[in-house]
Length: 110
Image (cartoon, rainbow, N blue to C red; front, side, top):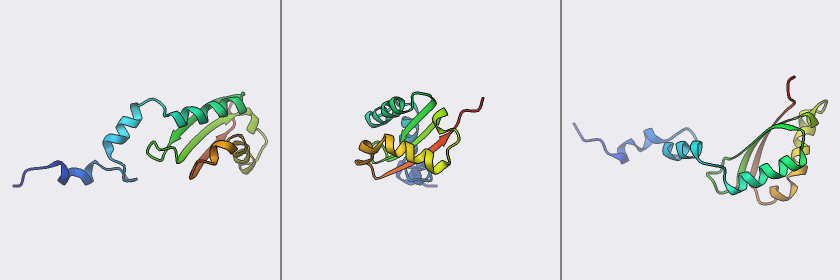
């Protein structure tokens, strides 16, 4: 029986997106990146009634792609496309340096 080596186990240490599992665990416990903090700050300023804002760099930390989850009263009675347009407008300067953006919006449930 051959000895196990890290190289042989590498496929087992990868998640579905191809990121090493150890990197994913590190990101789980790491503080926000500079880009995540910047985007979060802009969203807090533009959506003062937001009850939840979560910004995640999904590009591996390089700032090329973000996932944004935001819950705010400002989205009430607006269609999803209008809500996403509001977020895009709020981040128009930051978006210039991005390759992609995932946006999830919602209205708080009382």
